[in-house]
Length: 299
Image 1: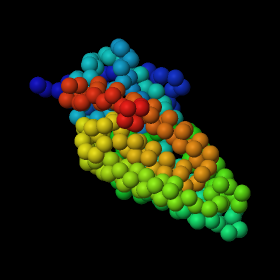
Image 2: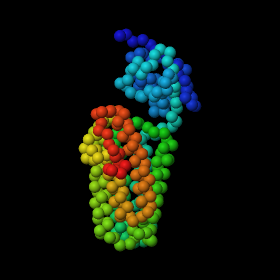
Image 3: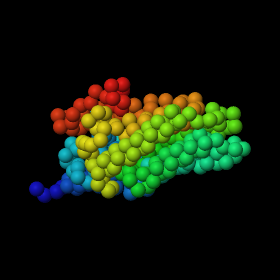
Image 4: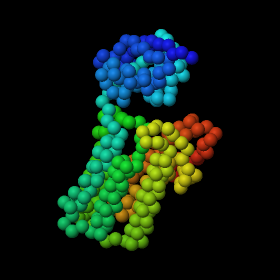
């Protein structure tokens, strides 16, 4: 069937973009990706700042090269709404910057605070530094993100969680000469804690490798994950992350570490619940529903 030109009415949602056109014309064979690119070009901005919805029902129009505008339900004369999401920053850069805080703070305060670090303080610094070094390497070489950017404001919110709560908070209370970690080590607690940490870190890495295999480079497709832990919970990466932090708590003997772990587990639980809902919605009967999203039998 021959293509024809479709003209859409373009309306701002919220504060309008500079130079946002009032009308936009596309071929009927164009895709939603073409829609985003042409609007971004006309508005002198990037596609990542745009959120486009249909005027008829307010439904979101995804940016994908495989979705023709005719399949979206847009017709000649249809209205679309364009919202400016504000300044954006790449997901990868956000992760790198937020993990950089504790990665630098812990070795620094370990050097500055105790006059003669104990075995537990040295072990604590080693485990926490390795944890965040692993996260940095995964961010740079392993993770594949479904979205390219996030709002710039999220950088400051996320960084506060890691730089302050995981960085300054844990480091200050762990490396002081009066901290519990400055005392003698109890091998019946220390070494089982180290074992939990190793199991947690390796299990978490394995989960991330499985999740990477479900998405092509630069793609945003999703698949049903299988493998270690996925028969027990929706997000075994969060389960193993929890084990690692229980291990760190057993080494640092610090309530500051416990506080961070509780906050982190609570946030991961919220994310895991959302992912379970998304899996059920996207894959229907193909997906085996989970009773526990993160901690078997508990959450």
